Length: 310
Image (cartoon, rainbow, N blue to C red):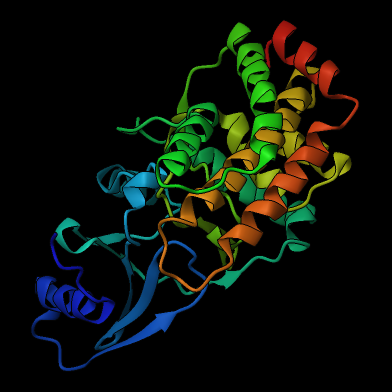
């Protein structure tokens, strides 16, 4: 079995591998908090600042393709909503991007019309980026996560079996009026948005791939705790108006977002070495997914998604 290189040794390897940093008079590194899959470091090279992200262990089991991530990150930068990719070092499991002088956007702030429109503009810009080399389906992901967890001896909560039939029904409903896949981020957590003056940036493209824009919209909505009114504002900002089919697809993908997130937490219990409560994370998302699935409007949403073009 190959030896696992420590984060310190990997980071030193990164510093030595980037040619532009070799002649720097000053190089300083410091950890950046917040990651629950990888380890992130601020790298200050003379007067410039970068972010070096060291991939977590066995993240391929989470469906992450680092080459595809690099391509997505470069596409995001090309359309003006992602940081510049400075270096990609697959042998060290590292992606280096330029540091963005920006501030986080709070969950409450996302409901403000001006901020919402700027953020939706950034999401839509990525949806219009060039084709990506990877694909994403939340239905395939939850299935794969279940198989991985079972193979690694993780106990899969009963909520998985309760939600899986609804996943199949949602997939079938969407298939009746299938939209062309577009580049999607698929991990629109609040922490992945930054505001630099009037410009919204989106970071972390590990799960990006060609997929359904309604997953991005539902993922964004549920991660920002939107209510019905906010969902209407989100759809209006993205499409210009609200229709029953758009509402249905957004609401159903909110369920799939939490289902995917809960199963991610289940798999991480057998993978990650980070100090994080993945079991509690999974349980919280399962609870919310089940609550969303119990909404009495689900049958109507399935019908609207099936019968009308979004």
